[in-house]
Every structure is written in C-alpha cells, then in structure tokens.
Amino acid sequence: MEICENPQFIVGGASRTDICQGDLGDCWLLAAIACLTLNEKLLYRVIPQEQSLSEGYGGIFHFQFWRYGDWVDVVIDDRIPTFNNQLVFTKSAERNEFWSALLEKAYAKLHGSYEALKGGNTTEAMEDFTGGVTEFYEMKEAPKELYKIMKKALERGSMMGCSIDSLVPARFETRTVTGLVKGHAYSVTAVEECKQSQHKTSKVHLVRLRNPWGQVEWNGPWSDNSKEWVSLSKGEKDKLRHQSAEDGEFWMSFEDFKKNYTKIEICNLTPDALEDDKIHKWTVSVNEGRWVRGCSAGGCRNYPDTFWTNPQFRLCLLEEDDDSEDNEVACSFVVSLMQKNRRKDRKLGANLFTIGFAIYEVPKESFFSCLLRLCLCVSDQMHGNKQHMQKDFFLFNSSKARCKSYINLREVTQRFRLSPGEYVIIPSTYEPHQEGEFILRVFSEKRNTSEEIENRIEADHPVPAPANAGEESEEDQQFRSIFQQIAGDVSTGSTGRPVRPVRPVRPVSAWGSVSIVLWVGGQNQCAPNLVPGFNPICVNIRVIARMTFKGNFQIELTYAAFTFISIFTTREHSL
Image (cartoon, rainbow, N blue to C red; front, side, top):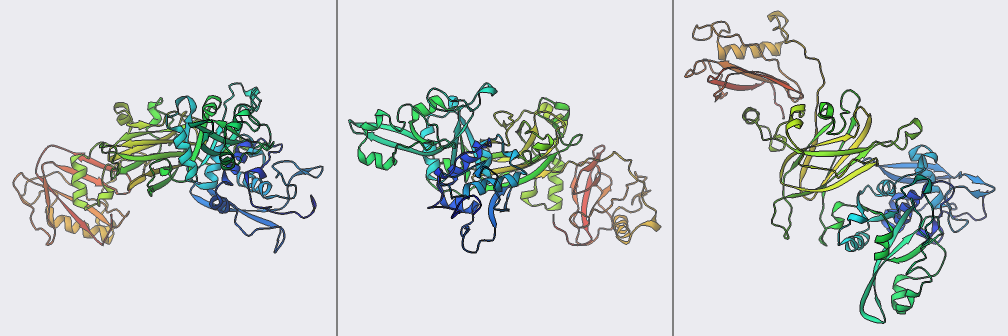
C-alpha cells in the first residue's frame, strides 16, 4: 500500500512481459525469468501457488531454488528498494504487480545481496530454476540441425537464451544499427516455421526473442512493422501472435539469428531432451568435492607435478546405449562440473575460477587385485582399482576424453560417447593452488555408478613392532592363536627349518573385522593343523601383506614360492 493502491502479487497470470529491467545489471537473470514463464509447471515450482497480497497475507513470500543438488526455500518480506516511490530494480509493466520484483529479491538473498547479481550468465539462473543441465553452442561451430535442436528443446520445456559477444568491455550493452544490444542477454521464446502466401512451397524459419529491458528491438527483416509480414496469411500471423508493440519482444529469421548472435545456451530439464522423440529416463550421479591448497588443488594437465593430486572420481559405464542407428557399442553420458558459492563470496574477492575436467580410462586389474577381490568376495559393483591414480600414471597415459576448453563460468558441461568400462574423471581449476568447492554430476542414458576415490594424505611412519602378548586385545589374541595353528612356530616353522618371521596382521574395522593371514612353506607342502571350514588359496608368489580396506594398502613381494592365503573373520561383515 506504500507504493501503490491495490497491490497484487500476480495480475492475470505471470508472463514474460511482466519483466522490465531496472538499474541493476542482471539482464542474465531476467532473461531466465522470461523463459521460466513459458513453462507453468516450472514457474510454480519456483513460485509456490496461492501466494497473494490480499487473503491471509502475512507480509512474507516463499520462493524455491535448486542449490547444488537440493531445493531450498527462501523466505523474504515485502520491502522492495525504491526511489521517489518508484521501484529501483526489476518492475512489471503493470504498476501494481510485484511477483517479478519479489522473485529478484529472493534470488538476491540466495546469493547474499543485490550487488552479487551484477553481471552473470543466463545459464546460472536457468539451472537454479530447474536443476537442469546446460549445453552451449557457438554459432560459428553450430551443428547443421541447430534449428531442429532449438525447436525440439522448446517443445520439451527446455529454457533457452542467447547473446552477442562484445570484444571491447567498454562497449558492453551498446546498441547496433539493427537495434540489437552487444554483451546483453536475450530470451528465446519461440521457434516457428511458416508458409509464405505468394510462395506456396516456400517456408520461412522464424525465431522469437525478448529483450529483458522491455524495449529496444530488432529493426531488420521480420521486425514488428517490416514488409515481410505482408507475405503471411492471417492464419499464419495468428499462429505467431504477431503484434506491433514496443515491449522488447520481436521476430527475426533463423538465418539472421545465426548471423547476428554469437552463442546460444540451452538448459535441458534432462539431458535426453535433445535426443530422439522417445522419452528416456537418464540416470544421474552427484558427487561433491573441494580443491584444497597444498593437498588437492593440482591445476590442469599443464602442471604434471600436481595434477595427480586433484580429486578423482571413478565412473563405471555398465551398459551400452540402445541405439538402433549406430552399431558402435558405446555409452552416452553428460558430465557437468559446477563450482559452488563463487557469486555469493564475490564480495570477499572470490571470482569465478577457470575450470574444466579430463577423463582417463582405468587400467585393467592386476593379478593380485583380482586375487584379493576373489578372496574377499567383493561384489561386481565394487571391483576395480580403487587407488588414487599417481603422478606416473598421468605422465604415461593420455586422456580418453576431456571438456572442450577450460573456462571461467560457474559450470562446464560436455556430452560424450565412450565404450563400456571404468574411467576416472579429474575435475580441476586451470591454475594450481586455487581453493574452492564444486559439484560433479554425471548423467547417463543407462546404468552407471560414480564415486570419489579416496586420496589419503599421511606421513610415512615406520612399521610398528608387534605388540607384547600381555598388551594384545582379546581379538588380537584370537588371531594369533589361529595363525599359530596354521603356520606352526614362527621361528622354526612346522618342519623345524628356520623361516622368516611373519609379522602378525592387525584387524581392520572399516566394514567389520577382517584379517589376512599368510603362511609360507616349501613348494609342495600343505599347511598343518588347518582350521575346519577354511579353504586356502594357493598362488605362485610369496606375499607379506598389510591391508586397510578404507584407505591405502601396503604390499611387500619377495621371490617366487608356493603360498596360500586364508581369510578369517571374527564377525559378519559386508564389503
């Protein structure tokens, strides 16, 4: 009531014409809001229904945003910045309508301030409104079927924005002679195909765009009052809802669209939105991590001494695509790397890092790791080399795939097709020693699993001497007794010949108490005093091993000899 009489939250439904930019440089956000109004289901996911300024009004409003894997509820009051009784920032074409201004305020609260919204990329807001994944197309390198991709994306509810790059920062948001604005975000609100009446066989492809300023439009062919509209029948005009009004929205031909705009961004609700007409349910795995200076902030491949220290995520592609058009056995997936909280922390000097990722194929299992997996009956999902890949691996192996380029955006996304198997994804900043948090999402057409590979940072301590018998726990004493039943006296062996003492193996407790007991004997000897119910496994190596299942394991190998390994547990465990 302080700003106008009869204030309303929404007047006649929320539409793209309700959004007019104010004095804040957040056209990227407003372009995304305009796209949001095209999908009512998405709109009311962000703006819960049944909110108003009349019945049951309590002075607060709720908005919901996707935030790094979770939907969060943001509550605000109804105080909006004004000057001379006019809204300073976003406003509606209707003076008494306030949903767009309140949505902008809630988004500013999510990021810490209005100041944090100055400058950005449309895809950030699109993803925060949908939880979707974004793909970029440079017009110079756009696929031939771009028109079809855009049309299908809009039909499936995807959000779309575009812009014209400005190579000179001082010329940002400057108008061209055709009425377009450089360095400015536009919404793509429709893609249509029309027949021209004088050319019955001729079809024209048109694109409808909106300037979030609410004014300043394209003045070339197919603009509001151009002569090209004469060639369309009344039915075609009605289909396009053509009207001449200075509202920031205009049509242009697809060819002019490609010539004038630099890039287009499509935020897909699911990565299959641009595939064929069949609806697929993609699987998604989400992993969170962080780059820590001196520990896991290794930089890109240009820094081989530290690159290997970056967080590593194992990806198992288990099933190939159902692709009748291609006989190649491959798995389609999309990798999305997003850095967290950089906009919110910008007031502390936290600008966006230049980020990217690389994908490496995991080497096949070694004989010994296969043996251990067999002994421990580890499930198929848990197989493979779980070790953090070391420096030498990256010096002698090239990446199987990688993002197109490192870039200083909140998110880097790339679509791939690789053969089924095991891979490791290395997300990194371009420069080493840059600290920050990130979220890594992998979308795949078929079943996949992904998890972080633990990189345990610890000092290289000497191996402790065996504990005295009097200091052993009851559990350790049980293992010592079992060991002696199998191996006999550790100083002379069961045959009376001296053998190398075997250090008792301490139990581990990550997933239950497990111990590996090793007995070393002659080439044709069998173990004496076998415990009933335990079957040894014979291999042609001599091994003294100490293993911790939740971390690194150490293995000592000596000369070849017949050895058998028995696995004992003190209680039930799950690996």
